[in-house]
Image 1 (cartoon, rainbow, N blue to C red):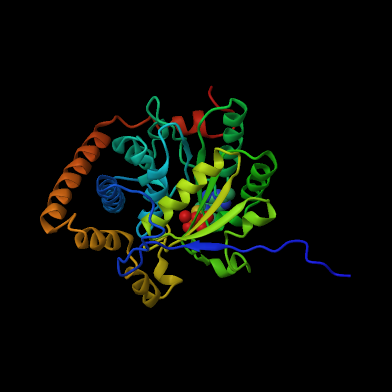
Image 2: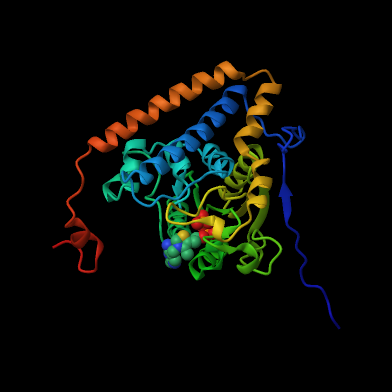
Length: 340
Ligand SMILES: Cc1ncc(C[n+]2csc(CCOP(=O)(O)OP(=O)(O)O)c2C)c(N)n1
């Protein structure tokens, strides 16, 4: 006798499509003010990014990982969190860190090679970003377990890339979260590449969301260039996490830039593919939606541009005025042996 013991399915959420049309049945309750804030934060993320690359190219910043094209995934998820919630970010989540209260000059300072830039201000629930691929989901899960034991009304969100889903650490975190039912949200930013390795070489599975199934937790895929879908999935995941049910969200997006400033993506992917994804741009999509709703126009866009440019200029000035950490710190604090 053969019996089916279990069947599973993975759902995909899409709310705001490429033509800026909305599925009103799925649209969560979001006020006009919130939509404008979401757009503003996506804009800040994009401009922060642009400046970081310009600084790196002129020798004023270290190696930097761009978020271009992934702003809806980053901001949609960070925006959904409540003040008491926590983030354990990857190296491709700078925009979410800023939204949650990390200071821009400090973040540039971190990317400029100064570890002190990773220290969050008081009462900002953001851990330092993790360069080690797939490691932060373990930290996040452990921390979430602690929150559960302390009966705190808070959840933890951790993001990571598609490549990280192949690591043991990430799978151990998923497994642990399932067994101990901890309030954690796994946000996989599936930007379709781990440096030059495409997802097709990472897994034979049709989705990454289904990685959740073996851990006994919910997995869902969302259009990662659709801020409303990411926001909704994160909100749903928060509600579930508070009941002790973790979620794995796969936000399917595309890395429009190189892996980092030390990569050249032209060597391993086609210009045609990049152009196709340009049509799915997350900022453009929300902007057209806001224009259709008469919430936005060219004048407001110009005002925002000026405001953010000035915000970034100030942050860069401040970053460059922070005295650099002494070089010996690398030997004092980074290598085995620790503080002398
Ligand atoms: C444990 C570990 N191995 C290798 C690296 C080098 N490395 C940095 S980013 C990266 C690829 C990560 O791909 P993915 O998880 O898809 O995230 P993405 O960079 O696309 O956001 C690798 C292999 C690292 N930082 N940590």
